[in-house]
Image (cartoon, rainbow, N blue to C red; front, side, top):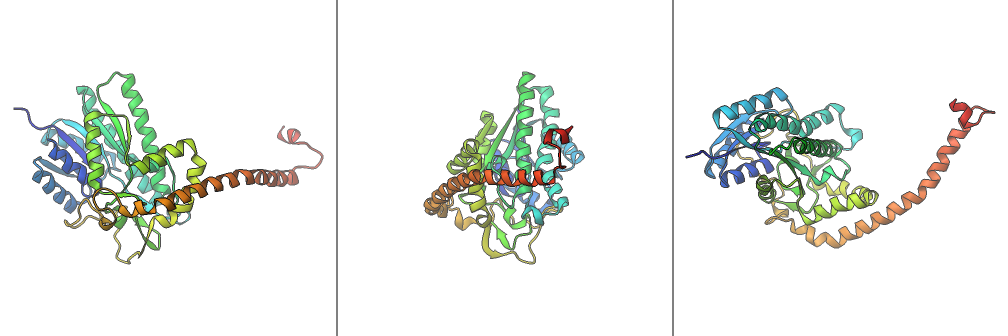
Length: 356
């Protein structure tokens, strides 16, 4: 009798990654769990085993290629041939760019973007010779729409989307049966808001509507099976992503008007707040897939968002007006710049002569 197929999940010690690992075990997979925190990995492994799967916890920093490569080799030896690899690991810095240490931004990019790159390369080294396998990258609506206070995360997720599309095109060009997909998540109630690096005065929070990790995990597992190219989860998320393609300036103004306060709760950041940017924060085994916003996301959807829909529509209409004003003001900005350029041009020469 053949053994169960093997799936790999990065960022598996908590949040969406942990929910995905359990969901895969429930659907018949043995699961390799990659993350840095030993306590979180051990707790996740117990949940996978409780769901019927074998679990292999492999402490790994996905930002380090050698560790990811070694993890793939160990999984193949100890658990079996890798059929599915889910790239989920991430971290970020909640801060205006002016208050973001460049070294912190680099680290967030290495984990969130290069972590997906490293996972994909490691997976394909095993999958392509066998001509079968599924790579699923966890994306975000912020791979399409940049919002304030999230330059590190938005930049990394935009990069992830471009990388995934490029790899997909290569696989198609080769006629490979290996697939790569991307699932773009809405706001999810995970521990990241309690342990990602922040320079904000108030506790970070997900921008409503807020979904539970199990909602995201169920959809990710669906994509594991049907291998669709790209999936955007949540009706509001689809509106934001679709609208940003048609009216990018409007949605930039919408983000500017709503996302600064929308990402901050009424609670002040505590002095003892952990940070997982360079060291694991899941150093206890009582972290779960869920974050601190369970009261805002009963079931799968944040009920407070439903009540705020009229205000959201008002903000969107205000963003349309702001975009129109910005474009009208563009003439004045152009004239002011042309005047400054003309004032500094050498006397007696036109622009063409100066350029020559």
